[in-house]
Length: 176
Image (tube, rainbow, N blue to C red; front, side):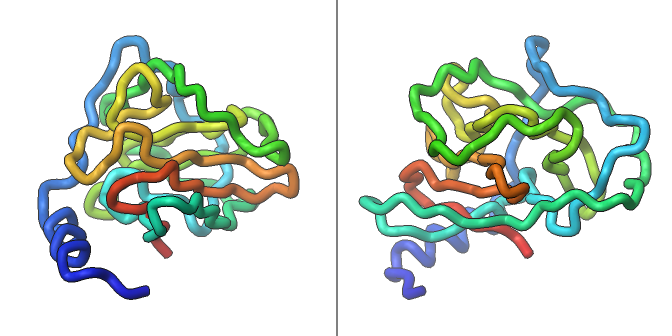
């Protein structure tokens, strides 16, 4: 995909800046890790700015992320305080008809920094909105490259997970 010179410079600048500032919200409803959680070979990295997929501003892009559960156990998380800020979750955006509410504890995102797992976000709802705006997003990411309502993570009825860009200014990319 071609980037305009300005877009490429903005993307490089966003990559070079300090990672997202993610803080604890006392109203956070993030579940603690399960005793024997399942692992996903391609967990989405929601801490560094690698959750990206470039798009045309008028088009809504869907990107499939294969996060199928496996029976392998995940090493226990380091003893750090919960660092993920949960927002108000009052967005009016509605997920597609194929979205499901998955069984609790089956799917999750890992918050990584320097390849160390800092937190685990349970994907147990029909939609999970990520962005800067506290009252509309489920998870708040405090970074200048993140839009007010940036992207949604949606569980599909076939067992897959989809990342949908919500018209963000900088696009949404998914790390390998």
